[in-house]
Image (cartoon, rainbow, N blue to C red; front, top):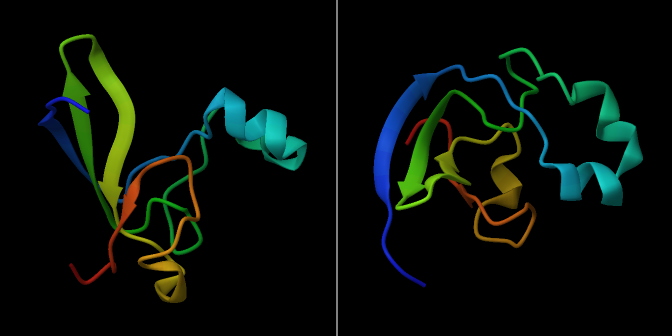
Length: 85
């Protein structure tokens, strides 16, 4: 609930899993410092960073290397798009 604005746009962004995700999936701890951009990066080819009054919300509109995940609850609240979008 509320409003957000797109405050940043990135091509081939670095992905850092949220701490809650690392807690659920400890194998992601190796990416706590960030996962390099690329075809297997969960943010895909592009990311739009959503900010609210408190700053970075942690939510993104982003591409995905897994096209079959579009429209399904797969992440920590981000909105997945096809890389072509």
